[in-house]
Amino acid sequence: MVPRAATRTLSTAEERRTALVAAAIPVFAEHGFRAASTVEIARAAGISQAYLFRLFPTKADLFVAVCEAARERMLTAFREADDARSDEEPLHAMGRAYRQLLEEDRDLLMIQLQSQVTSGEPRITESMQATFGALYELIAERSGADDEEIQAFFAMGMLMNTLAAMNALELDAHWAQALCKKDEFE
Image (cartoon, rainbow, N blue to C red; front, side, top):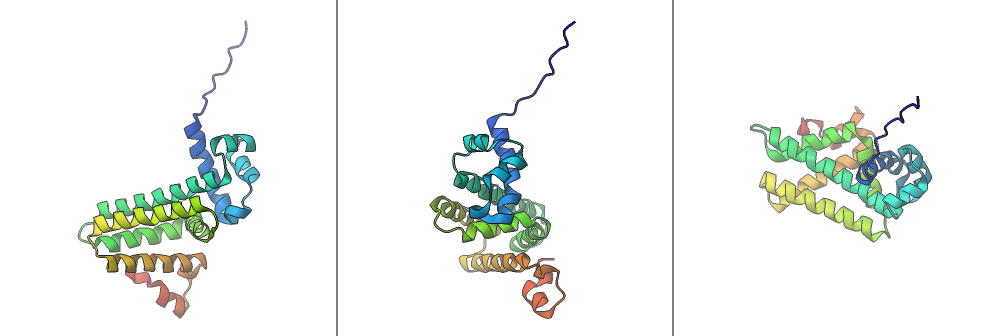
């Protein structure tokens, strides 16, 4: 009797792209766009480098997909925070959600910072512009805040990014406490 061949479920290209983006996030977060190795990313995803380039023809294409995943994570967190709030101000709820993201997902933070310092790559710049545009639209729609209030919200977010990148959110030093305004988002 001939043994039956094991059935194997093949992944679709879209499933592989999603898995590849997830594998690429920590590599890009640690090394940045320029220094990240596509060999290392492919290895982390369990695929060949050649297949990586079939799924994403350029390294920039993959990095843009990583940036888009980060954008969706932030947008989802803001929507969920606004949906879950009761009498809390929308900007306050979204600010707390963002702070929680920064505390729980250092890779998300680093992808944001890496994407903001990657110059000379127009598609990455366009992706960041799309991110800020989408965040602005969601925040404006959900909060009803005016441009000045939204600008202050973004400014606080950028300050939080900088402080989180240097691990200042965990410090007891007076300067860190003053700049982090820990009670503002709690």
